Length: 341
Image (cartoon, rainbow, N blue to C red; front, side, top):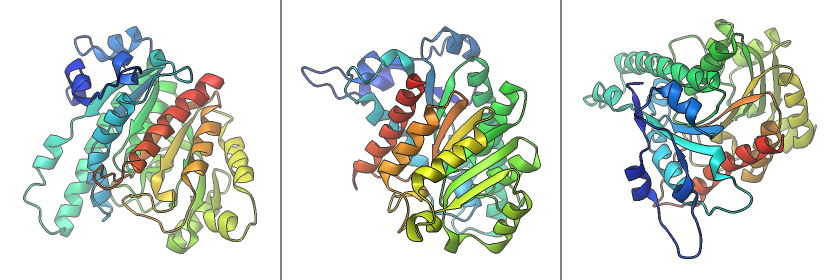
């Protein structure tokens, strides 16, 4: 793929921080050979889980959101490389592919200072272009028997993940999503707020389960969409569980998985759902990091789980490394859970 920047040994060496007496994941990590065609390179790799990044916040800007998700991938990639290797982790299972090259998209935006209506339309057109690239990459990975782990970027990239999975599988896909928002906004041009609207409209998404939606920040028309599609949409709000105690987190998680687990499904985590996690729509209330890990662990244990997508994080290593560590834990939790299956 022309728009793919591979993670190469020289990049890995720059990221590594070695320590006497321990082996880091990056010292023995699987890489994908850029000299081979992508399908051939993926098929030749021993790794099952292929980690890659989509360093962009164009879809977020197209949704009038806060920028910053573009920088997350590099920080997560480097932190993953420096995880100590031990008996709980098999280095042969995980490969870092690299990231989608989004620099050319930003060149078209370099003169945009204030967000005008024309700028928004430009963002939305570029988001559609990114959709096509993500779709091709995810479809190729799944067709080669791999499990993509995609680090965003905005939640707009869920559309490419769903479409790619559906192409590889030959049928529509289900999705479970831990999220403070439904991302079922209007079909008004592609952005981070409507990947599931478009996927439902295009018959790519069959069943959709959402956990953690915050009632106060969800407009009425979206509740009406959920009501009209009750057979295909399961929604449990954060307020019902975390505030009113109408159900437990574990019950809701099991119910959501039961809803989607009859066929292959994608696993989505929008970190907006975690209280105070730096993101494009930071929440003052919500689930904990531990609950997000439980979600990924249980979802990852299901044999029908086909990919993991983590999105909307804005991490600044100068601020606090704990959020980068949380993202790395999510990746490792999913890989470990899949191996338990």
